[in-house]
Length: 288
Image (cartoon, rainbow, N blue to C red; front, side, top):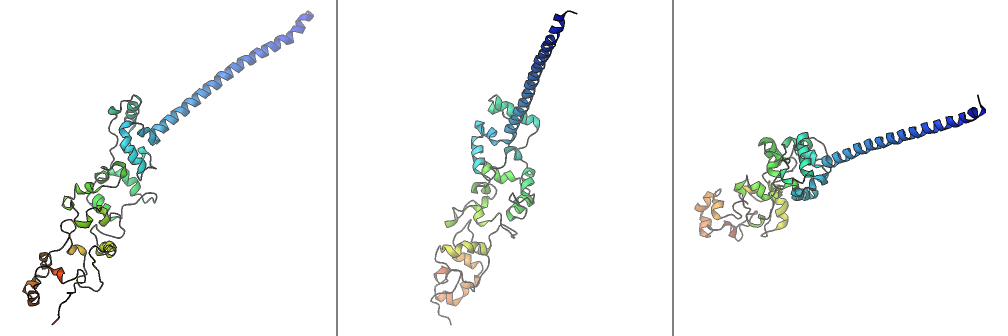
């Protein structure tokens, strides 16, 4: 063997090793690139899924949702994502995303309808994070006894949730008007939907007095020892008649028309000309 061969052999070996390193490096770069592409695609897909499924801004990006989105933003559920309540199957969700991506907003299928079970999952769950309604008189009557859907009352105001007076009057047409100084009150001002330890929605004497003892609309008083201390609604009908007439009093006091003392005093027209409301003591009456 010639000396030149033995001298060049290590060099050839080094070149072979370097060539192998180059090939390995290319493979490594390709492998890392592919891995990064896969990871990036998965992360991008996850972010897109998370945006369309859990970010309310996705719903707000549709111009048809502007009013509803603003109401949600200002409402009591603004910490709850849209799909927590508005639940659709995969096909329906895909159609919504496709219509959004193609800017065919008018072709977005209906997706806002809610069954009461969705509301009950939170509001009948005994979870203190949500307002619980099972023991409230308003919901006992409307939701549990009458079996009304939650949206029958709460949908017209969208995400604002609180029904307007007009929403109540759609069913309670007999209470279409509040007379006198109560005309600007909301129904729930007197009919306490969320009251505790109360069977019905009819205002009690105590609930009326909570306001009227401090309002002094007509300098009235409410002495505890006065006669006829019963429910205010026995006499007062705020949805039909603000003040009582002589005939209203006759509904209970029929014998007054035959009472000689009232006849002599010519007091058979307006009871309150002598009897101060709620104390009912006749002023200037000479007892015999």
